[in-house]
Image (cartoon, rainbow, N blue to C red):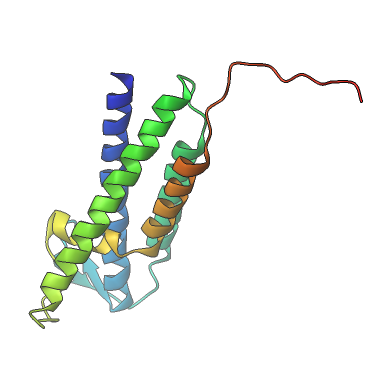
Length: 160
């Protein structure tokens, strides 16, 4: 039961992370052209173009927080932490695949003037194409593959 709950928490963490990175990515791309988007990805105002440094910092902080959660040792056992990582990795992989499929579908129409997609679709397509999400996913896969279980035994030394 703990493992299933941990897996579900990993999936939810992935959805929140990719969506947050997507919202901030839409904001960054808009600000680069002088546009301010609201949460529904609709043009809200026009401003002087800038780099969107606060949004970039937000992506860095969110990525660091997710990596901290995934890398810490679980106090309730390594299986719980492993299932959290598996849930996060699975959720992120699915969102990246869905994001790529949605982007391919949108660009096949060749209508580049319509701006970002609305709400969750826009967040996932922007978040799934962000390199920070890809790096966090790669680190997650690395953690899943390399983290070993602790054995219950103690280490003993022998005289030389």
